[in-house]
Length: 382
Image (cartoon, rainbow, N blue to C red; front, side, top):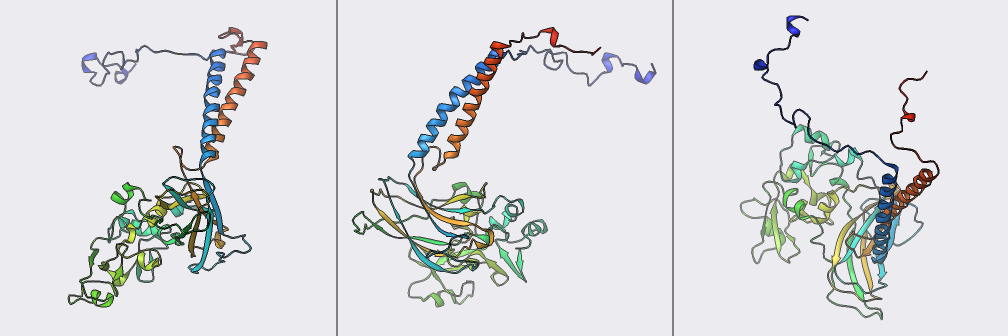
């Protein structure tokens, strides 16, 4: 042994682990082995738990009210709402949904899209999160992520990227509510606020830095309100907001930027911009190609036989990706909306565990195998 290989004295071993049970791996431990009957009992217990839970979840799902009507699809031959490959067609139609049971609020209104892959990697990464939170200066890395929907010529898109610029822009309104005998029920509206996550509203989205809004002074027209003496306001014409007031607004770098309200003027108010809740709901990526997103909710009870009439302006085409669109009126429970897959999953796992337990129980009863029997050891074959 050379001098370099000699072990130094303990006094010089500065990195030697302390002589404790934990660091020297002397901690007492339990080393279980898989006794066949304990394995069989384990599978049986899992099956006994999963099957009743699956039954309960399925029963809860079946009790959830849901009415669904498809209003546009690539393979739909006709219909008042059907459009082909014309985006932003603005085709108007009406849909009626009749309730088959009494419903208590909240009553949820969803739209459903089939065969649209929001979870595609290139699609879900095409966004600038700093821009969505209000930053107007863009880094080269974020600009690259948004390509090719970062600029149109010399005009910058804000927000940029695939997700923001493929926004679902069908306009859905609750036109009327009628009782089972055809009488109009007054005072029932569809709320379109409170549909986005509060954390998204507070921490993920924000109007651009430098954005400003202000209620127009009294006795002004929409044009004169924006054409103030200081020329600060970027709007050409003031807009009426949902609170009934007339607003003027200012967006920074407006001459060289196309903002969300300019891309989707039919559904996005310049006062809301990226804080529009329909936009925020859309920006939360769906995991599956068939998905639903909340559009609104009704906060009044509705009786059996009530007819809900929805007015739809169909702008979002589905022909190009062989998709389908539906409108859904539903309720929810502790597991969410109507979903038979979760109950089926629990049933499948439960019955599989029971089948495995029975198989091994029969095998162990007919051909038992002694645990740790040395005859099954094979170190070297002769």
